[in-house]
Image 1: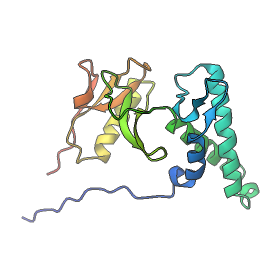
Image 2 (image 1 turned 120 degrees about the vertical axis):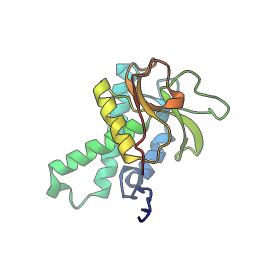
Image 3 (image 1 turned 90 degrees about the vertical axis):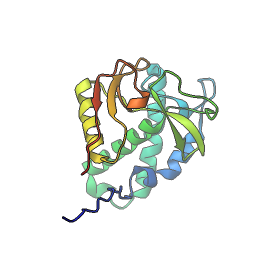
Image 4 (image 1 turned 90 degrees about the horizontal axis):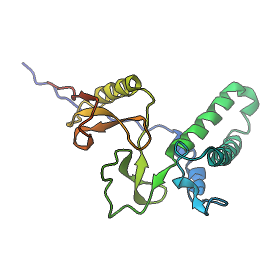
Length: 192
């Protein structure tokens, strides 16, 4: 019998949102929001903020992203119609998703909070706590956890779904960072 050579599935690099809007993201990340204690715009989490602040931040992001989109697509805007509207909404949602982080954490640990993940931020060049993606229902989180295990068969730790005490939504995490009240444990797929 021949031994099959199993290779890891690599993620293909595409010209996606991060590459397309790199310049505008850097400028947004270096902008301060006046009227709210001169806070960094990048540190505001719109899922946890008050509605007045959310409307203000969303309007700023929509304006910046739509301006950038129009500059990049001057010649094709009138030809596409709804496609352009779709791409602008997608750019706005991407930018709002990557916002909301805790900085100056190089000597800190996340503690008991499982709302955050420790990662490197390419825009500030520092290690930060970024918010995890929150799911509204357990079923949605379970489906994404199963998909995560299927996409990453070389993952060695078990993946679980748990309810966050900070934002009251459901997150996906590894076995080592889960609490005892974890809802679902999904084992990695064994490759033979």
